[in-house]
Length: 205
Image (cartoon, rainbow, N blue to C red; front, top):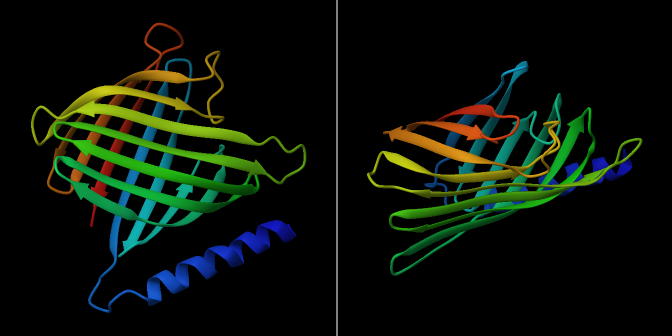
């Protein structure tokens, strides 16, 4: 518990200076995503995430992400660049996880766009601090093409401890559509073995 308290203090120590150094004209930007995991022979569960950004400061609050009935809070700093046709953004983060699993989770998010192809990946190393500790490496990666400004499709893979399947790395196909500040993506995972589906709704406000 002392280690988790130390991480909570560290999160505040990172977030407060980043927020304070921003120009007062820079406003907060908020967005959210809610994913429904649908299984043919199991109950559906939901994975909500809330994002808050102010300049380079990036905050995330998650539930059911690292484990069922567990919440996490992340703070990080965004770095963006643009070179010719390439646009990129990388966000190193550190997080605190509490619930059925307690621990510390350093991670990173990376988004690369070379019109019309986008590569997005997020990963973290979940350092379990609870009884019977079992640390874990998680990732989610998508490679998609955008034939139009509102439609995308491609490949997706993830390694997670939330799901109990025979496959260590889940893989599948996403198809998504966006309009203004809203987006909806349908994922089919493991189409040839233990298939399941994910519906993700995103919104910015």
